[in-house]
Length: 162
Image (cartoon, rainbow, N blue to C red):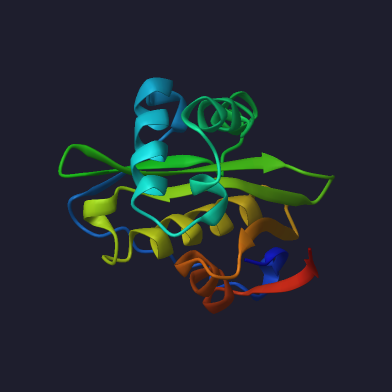
């Protein structure tokens, strides 16, 4: 497993994001923290993030609490998606420097993956961060994760490994 830090220049990102029928973008503050935690646990348990499988249940709960929900609900680039009335995914975006936003967490419900929702959430976050004046967006991920390829395909480049 290799952990990398990535950056995206928001000026190079296509600002057009089309939300498909049946999908609602909702403010993160309108979703109960217990629902966010449950989705995080389900998505990572079904996923390919090595760090998650190296943690015990208690450590996973502590880690989730460090992802910055309180800061994320204040940032307009953070959001959740509902699909057909169900929580389908969410993105935590935090201010990180004067002109940067950092994706602290992004998950999609396991049974709704491979439907373009990750791409949609990332696009919404990028569009909103740029509209709020951010010049860049950063995140950290493992290169073995499928999400790594999503990020690479949407303007993110590796800036640090380790």
